[in-house]
Length: 526
Image 1 (cartoon, one colour):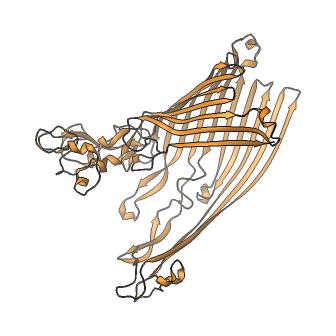
Image 2 (cartoon, rainbow, N blue to C red; image 1 turned 90 degrees about the vertical axis):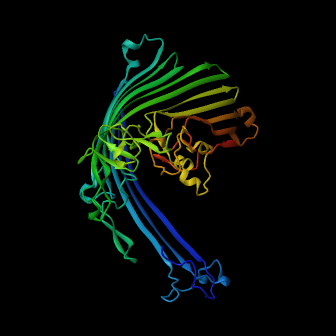
């Protein structure tokens, strides 16, 4: 910033700039494996595995931009005019250097008795350079049991049930790869900046020498089944996940020199159920038609935030008792038909024409979908297959930031391309509309929140698998498959923006998921 883009006026050397840079990343992985497996007395099956892994990443880069380009030496750094205090063609330079390491050691034990009862246990110790030395290493454990009910004596006479297995597990884990604080987030760091118009070194991160692992404890109970000669199979699971020492961004007073600091303060809980069901409608020698689907419901709740009960993050709020990502904004009340003024609701529910951040409320749900799932069907007839997959997310909403620009009188006078709804903008007393008079400032309010639930036709594939007797003549291929596929064919949604499917809270002209068509053939060599 602040560098001129060309020479001073009157110079015989051409203007413009020349920039180049490089970057490289290296990753080393060292892994050691060992194990023991044996079957004792045809009853006791024991499997023990020991695993150790060390990962080390290095990355660095450098870039520069030079100015005052000689037109006779284009596309080469030799064209750059050396910078001096007189010509002010000071080159811009930059770069980075970073690295991290992750160590893990794990022991896995599996014991099974007569194929009926199985116990799994694990213990691991991880270390991450992304945390301060005193909190760098952490122990984790997990244990689970499985009861294969169908192998019990009392189940021998069950004619319609082919599989029935009950599972129970509990374990702890944590986030290590891509830790929220980054490679050196726990350190107080400095960087280049400016003070009183001069380049200098300034503090850039407050750091936190007490940061530690975000821990997750998971309890899971599941039932797997298969009936009618396994023509119908499925599973049902219920779970609870509890995250402790979750990192949150705490606001700091500006006199501290920093806006925020990462701290381990939150406790978050997820409770949910998942159901999976698949079935064969037709199953003969040459024809097979199957359908399937899954649905999952997750209830998320912030249990604790440590030092306080809530904190804002832009247009969302993290508050005890609410799910993560809850919208937090002033509630829209429409347009005054007499004056064209925008109307709002105060925090206590009263009508007002005065916009105030103090009237923000969290009455609009979250941008994390509680309901997710999909359904599919597959038809196989004499080597031809037709597969279709649908996915969906329900019960969530997002801010459509595009509405703020496309339905905003302020941008109409600036020549922006707006939507046809702007033709209904308030113009005279008595106009009933949801678009205010251009005399009043457009605010970011709850009317910009839209239901983002959707059902998407994810893929449709038509394929033919060539028969082995045809391939035998080639003496080269053991398999071949020709296919035509379409992806993201249709989306059913009330969302007005480009694409409802995204992981963030605010939609702002992100490139939508493309509709693609593919034709191909796969060969398998003998």
